[in-house]
Image (cartoon, rainbow, N blue to C red):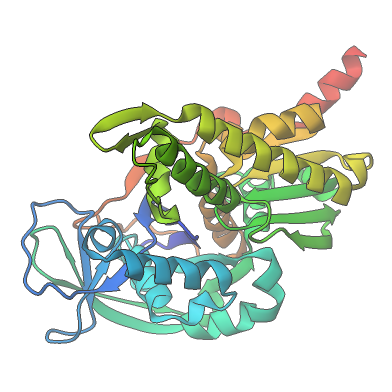
Length: 397
């Protein structure tokens, strides 16, 4: 019998983040969340495992996934896909969702064909659609994947009913912090006190408040206070900026899907000249960050009776300073627990799968073939209960 493989699959707006544990080791993988049909026919690429193609059988329609999909798709195709993902609570019904789930899970199997998988849904759609998502994913999955110049290879696995768990995205980060590497309860304090989990993504800012083990409030600021709003403001202001530096006053439009590179670099190239727009980027982040924190501050009634504010999600990094200024020592930043913020949900899902599974590991283990996953080390300090730090501060006073 092969060793059990635990997989946390967090399919988000911008990217699919997967964390797995096999034979005592953790692996992580990021794939840009984009799937488009192959309309260019036969292609040849260097042996880059990030260039991924998918099909169910030879002769069937082929699909580009991730990085390759971005490079091969048209602007209108990108816009349509992003729009459907962002504004639809039932994105999991789309064929693209299933393809991305299959590819990202299949590349993390490590020799097993019956993985133990945990997935998540946004706060505002979890209750309504968790059972439907389960029905969508349970069963046998058989398909072929091609990476780089390697030949097509068949991947087959089965998601059994007892091996699939669906939870809300913010709860995944709670388990990342509250459970140890083996899925055992570590920080019991988080299940006793009143805790607010703030999961900040590209298109959603989800807030869940717990008291004990009971979720007492779910709130979602979908498409109002999220990184998307930064990009919307930035797109408008870049149009104004380029018009102001163009002698003909013809500004350039920057679609939202093209902005991550500009946000990261703080630069744009316009009519052969490079311009520093970092101040414009920071202004947009500040405006949205302050509005988000004000909304959270009021919704949580100033956080007076909340012990911890857990901040997580891929968009939590730019907004962290505004949370720190408002909530001070109550803030727990997921990235401080040994893994990047964007992988916190995936890691929590993986730990949750371990905690719920009754399967005992065996010593048999098969290495995955062509893979883009990375083994990573979880620091021992990530296992320290946060309650200990809280008690030390109280004692000094």
